[in-house]
Length: 164
View 1: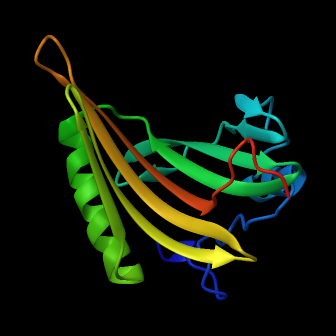
View 2: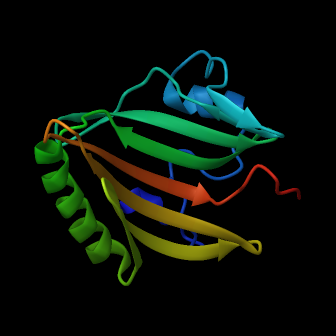
């Protein structure tokens, strides 16, 4: 968790800093290549390497977003969708990130049956927003069960219609 804040004060992952190329990202992840993009628009492309890191025994998919050839965002999506599994991890991550990075912005959204809570830590890099975001969402199902999602994202916020 302490690898998300760089010496210059921006939010980026120390192992894969903002701007690293696709080839360098693959090398640092220990894979031959990142494979085909799983999503994209304009010059923004998202890759999901086969590597699956774990946190507290829970596996996460990794999404790497590139604008051009430079990495802009890393997102860790926990693969479990069970609220009972994700809530303790969410609460622990919230506390750990607060202890490491201090004051945050928080947003909540309630549009039944879908709900979400997000915590954000922001700073700027060369005039661009860099962010660490913890996002938890859940949906109440018709059968009474609850499906949940938890993700942690870090990097430069780039949108498909932005240009340098």
